[in-house]
Length: 261
Ligand SMILES: NC(=O)c1ccc[n+]([C@@H]2O[C@H](COP(=O)([O-])OP(=O)(O)OC[C@H]3O[C@@H](n4cnc5c(N)ncnc54)[C@H](OP(=O)(O)O)[C@@H]3O)[C@@H](O)[C@H]2O)c1
Image (cartoon, rainbow, N blue to C red):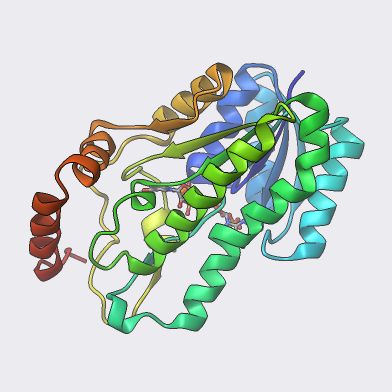
């Protein structure tokens, strides 16, 4: 039975990942701050055929990170997959970014995943396991009003790229998942600059969390280094490499348009 340590498991993509892994008979170590929601997810996990250990807490707190990895090792007997999925959006024009709030977001989106891999590395080397980093299309293209969030995902991509080369000799794989818009509470949970309109309506291009979860499991099974989960992401990714000039024009147009609230 594979053990999967999953952050951000209380809702959204994390919840879908928990159920998808449970259906493969995995043991899930569920992490997020909302204890009640995690217990609900744990019920779904058991109903889907898996096992669940609930470890509520804040991944930006080092004491909690130590507890999470310790309990995974002691109660689940090791770690096969560490999924760094917890994260938060941040919508603000660059000139209005509150750097203190941006620093807090980096604690969650960048430093917590890095620390968790550092702490889980011995167990992952033992199992010749896999790290999953939940990046974003914003990890390769920084659209207007996404400067802070994209900076965090670019940083996560850089850490993942470097770490992938370093961990290969220990038999540990690093899988980066790049979703575009996904239908989850992510937009309403995001930090927004004062007076920045919108981002609360569902995105019509949004993919389901279940679809992202299925692609993530397949990537882990196949050891794929990077998975771009939708045509939207693949087009944006290709444009950033092959047509940076036209992409700059599109983004300039986006900068003058404001999303509806
Ligand atoms: N949805 C999208 O459009 C989209 C697109 C591309 C990439 N992504 C990425 O996908 C990942 C999951 O996003 P989602 O859409 O599922 O978002 P979501 O629905 O807002 O879920 C975020 C999860 O992170 C947890 N979390 C937030 N702050 C935390 C903290 N300090 N400590 C522990 N857990 C914390 C939340 O649980 P608690 O509140 O209970 O702690 C929740 O389980 C994120 O990394 C996001 O950047 C999302």
